[in-house]
Image 1 (cartoon, rainbow, N blue to C red):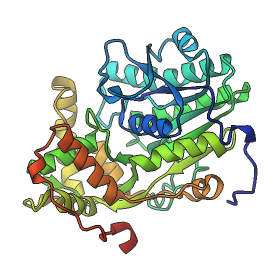
Image 2 (cartoon, one colour):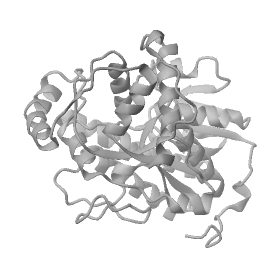
Image 3 (cartoon, rainbow, N blue to C red):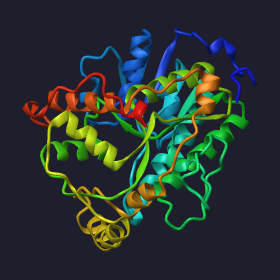
Length: 371
């Protein structure tokens, strides 16, 4: 789609660097990248934090912190007051088989939370809001899931294997569009699996990378997914705010990689490790379907690397069509290899891995360009 096909609804938003910006989820992986990108532009930022929540991601940053719960619409209306732009990044991410209570949390945080933030943004008359979407909620061809998915493909709800998280993010978009119909100017910035620095907690991918550096990754399954570098998804959010079209969705993906590709990148960064055992996806899915539900129910704090849901996603080998983001927003992807390097440097800085395992990576290696 041409960048000149249709101009943004609010062209005055382009280049705006005045007024306060409100960000939810600023301590998460995507949000932490976004906050630092906004600070590079000299933005005045107000970040929502959970009462008593971990604030390491904000240490040393010149941002205003306000406490609140996105499940409380009145609270959101109060904390957004005085801001002229809103980025709603916060969400509960899960690839597990949820319990009844977890279903409620996923729905209340991801769906009702999005509705509350968007309604509050509209009530405060903000210039524009950006909702962080998930590639898992973008539609695909059920006859060929590997066919590149565009921004316009509706969510496919009839697959019994669709995870509750994906459904919740599709519903969140619907809630946003209902507020857009009432007059809010808002767009969706869709993220794929994020890799990069500032992964404080860390994410499921970050934990796997740390475990690999410690020699704890024993097996993997064939398959792949679209990954996005942290700096790329942050840049995408800023571009969507500045140049996106009201009510439209933009997908941001740096590159599709198989798990085998990622393992080789990890080996380049942390040195040779014994190669994990490659297990057929069907076998691993059958095994994980037996233990995943039991672990989720009885040992919810035990990390699960390969769940039936994650294996399903990997074997679908979904691709993203980012032509709208590139054509309309001028967005350009960078490199997952560089994002992997940045992530490992961050993990070493935080003491999550031993810095001694890091090795120098030749600057001319470029997996994306080579494929």
